[in-house]
Image (cartoon, rainbow, N blue to C red; front, side, top):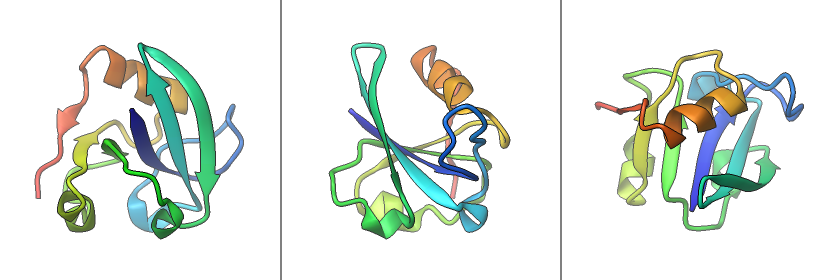
Length: 100
């Protein structure tokens, strides 16, 4: 399963989830059987060519229409969350569906 999220940096240890318009980089996480298999980074969301299953954004009200049109399920995590916190929230079903 592929999960995309907007981040402030490519540094895995310090990266934080940010609003889409503030993203300096987009992460594409290959998540399978409860384990992160890989994380790839893209300068723009449009550069991601794979079929993404989930997008995780930083807040309600983000411009998620392009994702919905691509049949990507969108969830909301806490702005400023680390990659580990976002994945943990996803894994334990603590994230909420985005509203538009």
